[in-house]
Length: 463
Ligand code: PA5
Image (cartoon, rainbow, N blue to C red):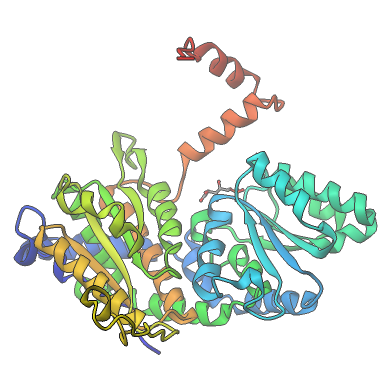
């Protein structure tokens, strides 16, 4: 099976200049810190970084597949109720590995998938109007088992199911993925008898796609989860190498740190030249932002660390953001996702032979055009001294996508060591959750509510 490749030529000083690119000496100086970063991460593998071992949890994988098999053919829709790390991996892998027209029936008799990762009443209310809950399986996913958005959605759809089916029959329309012991959702599973899966200890939301968080919904809609897990396991083996030059996660991590800390590039653009891979950029944006975006260092100093992730899609954003990327500030570096062999061969028909401005396209393929645009953009950015690397996927397969996930997770974990921050907490996210509890009047959060209300500035409005 093809290995995912990381080409970092265009991030080197020899290619884009010393102000913007990394010199051999700078990389060499990161050899020992990178090794130490990897050792620090791997030392926690069996302790609190259990997400590293998710690709090997074969008993869990079998349980997920058994469950998916047991409900096969029963539901028209699978709906994920979850947010952040409980949703983004599923969204990205469904887009990558199922047809873009899956929900129109392109993948055969499999259920459609909807991930309601927002609580905008126009999203939720419209869903209630359009969908028959009695033909739907709701997968409620929350590691903490308390997130207000997810719990509110759960209460809504549980109620809709009970109204239509009665209490007893609604049970089999809900499957819960949450912590083994903590959180009110686990308590509810115990009371109701819902099917349930566990988010294991040592697996934070943004590192959970290869746990039942992602595996259950993906298996339900026909994704080859074993292929994804095999890819992740193969990459995991590669990433055990302590040699900077042969470990893609270490190179990627070292480049991210150097680009921000030494080359003045706080913005990390992930630009997918693949529609199917494009939502992996969203998944990575959360992984990077929540892991490295930290006020304090591990020693408690204010550092206000963190790159700003930006997502872009080729060729679409060539006609939108590329102008800025080419000629704007030198504050960005770029990671391209590139596919060598698409699944479809589509030829452009010949016509208007006398009109040169269109006739040159005739008989060529969309792959040729797409790749010409991709390679042209990469060359132009490189000439403009904009450092860039490319992940080369020979094809978009479960195996290649699994490799990407594990590589980027290990890279970000190592970044935590380079940046000196805790890559596995999210105090900023928790603060937002607490503020929402307070403003919704949840018991125990009265003081926070008072603080927020007294701190609210006088409104300034132009009407
Ligand atoms: O990565 C994270 O920790 C967060 O994005 C969470 O996934 C998100 O806040 C949802 O949390 P929970 O799964 O506990 O409902």
